[in-house]
Image (cartoon, rainbow, N blue to C red; front, side):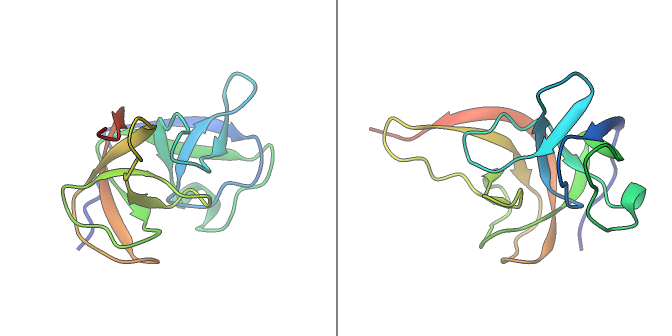
Length: 133
């Protein structure tokens, strides 16, 4: 069962296509977000699906972004509860696995295990991790 209890949700404008339940980062303008697309992206929250009816948000649409609390997120690979999560190329959560000396920007910690396509849970906690040398 996914855990979903967002403690703080903020409204932003989509700076491009944003899918529901994906990691997001700041866009090029204030109050604008874009979907995260790499393990090095500075994730700050997760897009909600309710504001878009679980459809993709287009440029300029308002998107609610959960920035605190456990929330639903789509997994992009095999995830084990307790894993630090980063974004894949489609904003989905995958396990952080940086190469030696490489930095990843994490979006939080997995609360449940799952596989690609599952809607799991992440405790939002932006940070970074560096691969061991």
